[in-house]
Image (cartoon, rainbow, N blue to C red; front, side, top):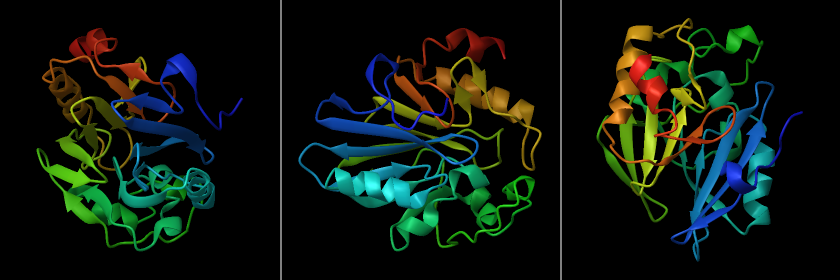
Length: 221
């Protein structure tokens, strides 16, 4: 059954920790996890991977008295960018290597589903190690190529990791699409071990997990 909202011990839904609020919802035909993250007392929010159903995501913001202050994309595949049209005028961040995916159905794998909707092409490039100050958060960019050339994870306030399609609960992203490389993905997964801290992990698909819970997978891949 498709899940629209997530609550409770899984870590999805609304989470309050150090005045941080997190709300997650699944969107689109491949059930991409989109996240809304905001500081208590603020009305500007981060939107992470608006993969589809942009108006549904925008409605979720309005219901909470929020507006999108920035959009973070973990990579450029179609199922993580399909809702961008609802956020025109909002700064969008994406790794330089995946910027061409916004213009190419072949590179973004949109051709697999016939998704021909245009994406905004004015995203701002991010790079490994860059720290963004957005909506009251410190967002560290971790370059994790493998699923795509420009896949990244976002570490927010050093406490929460948004892993896109790099790391899942008990799994990792496919590497058989354009730009994919298993050897690069292996290196990226091991790179996450260097964080040396157990942080909750919110992936692009499926349930939440934690870095230490996936430690064996990271070592043995």
